[in-house]
Image (tube, rainbow, N blue to C red; front, top):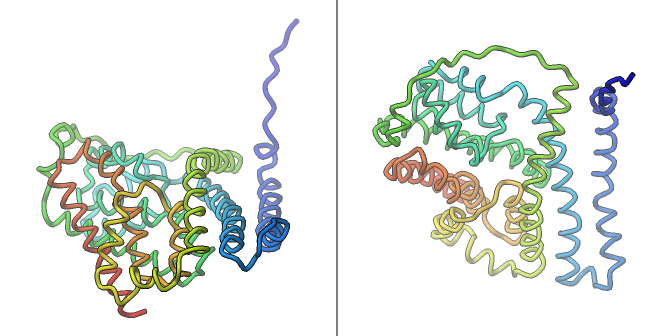
Length: 348
């Protein structure tokens, strides 16, 4: 008689704690080998290490595995943490809170929730249905892509904790203040009619138990989904950063993105808005720009505009927002980013 054989669980699912320990050891070993391995690879090539090409190649061969390792590690960990923050739970946490407090909560939740511009429309609809105020919803939508775990981890890995914490504070401030201003403007009339007229739904959330194996599986799924989608942007960003690092003269970069050029901050924002990339793709470019003498405030403004005000996100949001609300959202956030750029160029 034939018997049904159930597929065996993979090792991470059968021994999740052992898998986590082994994966951590392997990750740190690979990370420590990055600098000597990149130098050895460049030395094996028929190029002069001190030349423009040699510097660009070393930058690319070092930063590519470094960014991919950082991204894989943080996406896996956050994939496990994100199992606690489903869209339903996020709506339940924000619904019914007073503005101000809710803006702070929404911006803070944006750091740990796995949402980006691609999920902007369903999230926006869900928040509106749950009775979350419009300004609070915008605080979340600004923070989620701009102050996410990928951006903070890569900034920490490349520039240290001071720059990462600086970016965290700036991003949260822009998200909180922008959302609060939009809420004060009372622009609910500029939602698309079909969104505004939707019946309200309950924001209650029922907890479901998950084992460690389930959370490990969630982390591995996040790695497959996120890293699998963003690696082309990573390679493109690092390649552009390597070209800047190896070939762009420092004097030229300082002249167009330095502190002395008052127009550099608005120009950086204008350049950043139509770019289609994310934190993983833009941070290697930021690293190269800073190394070439660009001012920190200008570069932060460029990075924030790329991540928070990308043209593709505006096109997606057009499905649920009328043009006047999109223009207000863009103007308020851009103003906050400009202030950030000018202030930090003045004090640093």
